[in-house]
Every structure is written in structure tokens, then in C-alpha cells.
Length: 625
Image (tube, rainbow, N blue to C red; front, side, top):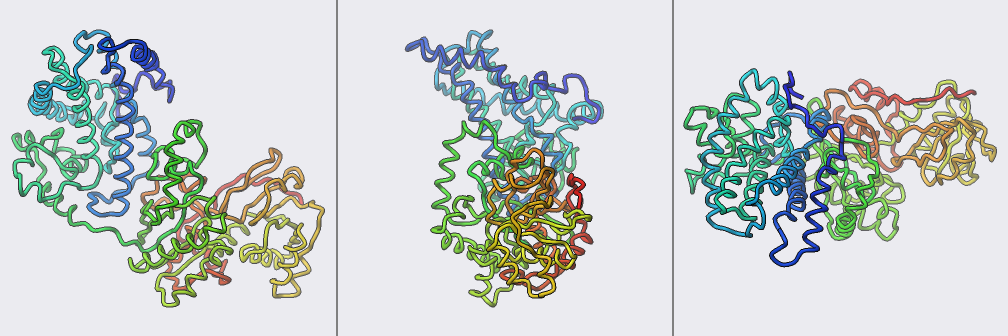
């Protein structure tokens, strides 16, 4: 919102939310009906194509958004290093309002402007007129309108909304108050309406002009310099008729310069070109890819998770992962992406963050949960993880943490096999088990006298069982095999007396580990508290019980560029496995934490708190002893 919102700031259909698209329904139905029922010249193809073309514009916008985020994460040719945050993502969720507005105005135009009916597919004179009028009146009028919008009166009421954040994304290009969009539409209507009344309009001139506007808008806001300097060397005059992302980025940082729409010529004429334009452009082109200090290696979860990635839909990525009904409509792309993971075998960079003096990246292995479960995929998965580790080694990465199922004991012995294969590795492998143990132990209510330990015997469950036995808390295992495994692996005999096997589940604290069936929840007493030890969330089957999230902590406020959620976790909450790698990197601990090796639980817990990570507040009930 602008600092002092003026009239017509809000969009008229704001109360409708996502249902605003229903406003187009009458025209969509009518145009489709006419396309089906009429024949030959009676069909108005242009009328029918309005809605499909609006959807195509949305796809164009999404492609730009994904491309920009991917490239800026890698760092090459990036213009600004400022941080994105959740507030900006929330402010830009209504980016499709302008699509709805354009569609409505086009449909209304078809109703009241007779010349719009049955436009030809192509007319060269109409294309030329559109280009000339854009370069002349549109660019000229936009320049002065834009300067006026930066006057205090209009800026505080309207244009400050667009400048709320210095860092820009392609989607930022269409984030304006309603009144501004009306003004812009009137400007862009000069070429289109002129071709209509001169009967030189065509489908190509209309769609081509809109495509040009969308392309240049996205280009200028992508925070990535894409125009090679060789282009201006061969054609020097281009700098007057085509702006660069750097040119417009400076407008968002300096505010009082570089006002032009897409053609900088008017800034040159009126002396408002920023003095640092050329040097900033050259500096951006010289920037190389970022070399991170810490890498978190994760993977895809469900097929729908591709839409929740930071490179997917920004609004979905900013919220915990959930299933949406409209994913059913996107099943062709979901199926295609799932099939592609069987052939694409390289990790990709998902996210880049900074914290204190550390640069961090999240890398994703293009594989889903179901592929990790399959034994036939283990060799392929280990090869992908191994290649990622070697890439990290060659890039000078100090610490690589293994997230989700990349550190399974059955898959790679919690990462130990990579150390065995490459004993000279400089990059340290961290499975995060010590911090997981610390978070779980600090999540157990203080008055607890007994707990139920579920699932198979792992290094995490063993460390938790040992720590609880030392506190004189009774640890109950309901499976005899798991009880015997824990008994054998607890080295101190005096602690084993607190580890018992029982089939009567009276304790209300349930620590849930790996290979635990969800339906076993039904055995727990009413009011029980389930605390997961694993990377995957529990399936909540009981309404009369309480569930904690997977081991995680809240990131410090100084943790930069955090604007997407990590899988199912809330905003600014990070998994223990990811945090462990960051803590190891900041503290400079030159040790591996993988295989049977576990770092000091108390040391990493205290270090995490000192660095500003905080326990996740959760509703923990009072549990009677």
C-alpha cells in the first residue's frame, strides 16, 4: 500500500479474492459458445482468443519469475544484493489483477467498439503504426507521467507502492495501485485504438504489442543484467531505444533518474540519466557465480512440491507446503516433471542466503520421496549425492549438510560412505543428528517421568534414549526388537535399568522415530504428545492428541533473503539438519558428523542459541507424570 493511499488505490474486486476470475466467466462462456456454434466468417477468433491469451501472459510472467530467481540465486550478472522477504512476497500476490483488468477492458471493447469484430490475423501497416506510436506519444507521455508520479503528492498516494522495496523481481513490474493501471492502460491504448479506428488492427498487432510490453517490463525488473555489451558495441544507437535491467534498477535505487518506459531517449534528452548507469551496467556484467561457504543438500518431496519451490509459485513457496485443489488441473505438467526427474541427473540451486559473514545455498536433487523408498534407486541416488559433494568440494564449500532422506542410514549410513570413498575431502559432511537430539530433548516437558520411544533403533533414537536414561526418565519401547537393539547399544549398564519393554502404553509422551506406522497413534492415551525424531512430519490422525513439528528452530531476524518456507515448516523456521550445517560453518568446526559419529549435543545447542536461533514456540499441554 502507498504511504498515504489516494482514491482508486484498491482494486474494486479485492473483496472477491481469487474469485475475481469469475468476473470474466460470462465473456469466456459466450466467446467459447460462438466459436463452437458459428461457422466460417461468422466466428470471431480475436474475441475467442482474449482469455487464452491472458492465460498465456500469466505463463510468460511465471517463466520470467522462475528464470530470474534461479539466475539471481546463482549470482552471475546479479545487479543488487539486497534481501527479499515475506512482506514483499505478500505485497506482490495480487500481480494477476492487471491480467483480469486487461481482459475485462478488452471484452468491454468488443462490446462497444465495432471495429474490434473479426480483426484479420496480420496487417503490416497496423504493426508499423503500433511501433511508431509507441516510440513517439506513448514513450513521451509515459516519461512525463512517470516524473509526475514521483512528485510528493502523487508519489505518497500511488507510486510509492511500486517502490516499497528496492529489490525487484519480474512480478514487481505490475504491482501498482488500480488508478495507476488505468492510466497505463490509457497510454498503451493509443496505438491499439488508433489501429482500430483506421482499420489497420490485427490479432498480431494486438498480441504482439502486449507481448512486447510484458517482455520489456519483466526484463527491466529481473535484477539480472542480460543484455551483452557487444550488442551496444555493434549498434550504439540501441542505448537510446532499449533499456537494460541495470538502467531500470537504478531508478528503483536512486528514484530521481531513469524515468523512461523502455526507451531511454527521453532521459537523455531531458538530462535525467543516472550518472552511474554505464559503470553499474559494466560491473553487473562482470559478476561471476557466487561460491557459497555452506550448502544444504535436499530433494523434492511430493510431485506437487515443484509448485511450492522458491523457483515455482512465489506465493505458494512463501507458505508451508499443502495440497491445493487446482493442482488437479495442472496434472499434465506435474506428470511431465515427474517423468523428467527419471532422466535429469544434476542438482540445481534453489536458494541463496547470507548470515553474518557466511553465504549459504540450498541445492536440490531432482528426485521425489517415492524414489528414495525404492531400493532399486539407491545406487542412482548415492551417485547424485556423491556428485553434489564433489561439486561442493570443487567450489570451495566448507560444510555440506544432508537434508531429508539424503542422509538415511540404509541409503548411505548417514553420509559415512562418502567419507570412506574420499578420505581427503576438505568439505565437511554434517547430518545434523546432534542438533536434532538437542531440540527433541528440549521439547520434552520438564515434568516428564516416562516416555514411549517408537520406531527403529538409529543414532538419534539411541542418543535420546541414553540422555533420558541419564535423567532417570523411564524410556518405554513397545517393540521387543527395538528394545533389544537399544539395550545392546547403550554402553553403560547402569543406564539400561531405565529402558524397559512394555506393551501397555500408559505414557503420554511419544517420541516417534523411523519406520513407525501412523496407525499406531491409536494406541496412545487421550491427550498424548507426539514428538517426531525424523525429517518427515507425522500424519495427524488424532483430534484428541497434540503434535509437534519436525525438529526445527526459528532463524534470526538478521538471516537474509529468507522469503520461502522450508517444505511444511512455518515462515522463518528452519529444520535442524539445515541449521546444523550453518552452525558448523560459522563456528569453523572442522569435523564431520556422519555415520556413527555425533557431535556434542550440548555444544551445538548452546552455539545455536548464541547465534540467534530460537526454539519454535509450540502448544505443549500439561502432561501428568
